[in-house]
Length: 122
Image (spheres, rainbow, N blue to C red):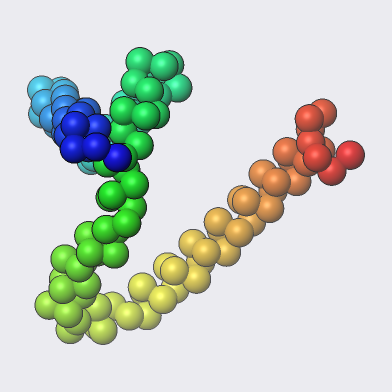
């Protein structure tokens, strides 16, 4: 891990973030720029335009510091605790229902993949 590899990886990630922000603003599309940047990064990684080594070091650092990146969300929870408590029934119901939906979709998908011709369950 060298300073130049970290700088290069950061530049690539920030460039993709900037491109996605500009594209979404020009098109007038309501879509999270960070999500579009991740999709662009995935496409560029899969196509070989960007090598994994280019962004590996900066991604390692970001993963190490991920807990710190959630601090603003934690502070927001404390700031809006009264709203969260007022809507707690809806929040809990949404978490439970979506968890079961994810569990069911994952089970159906796994079952489909295991039954497919390349599945490991044969």
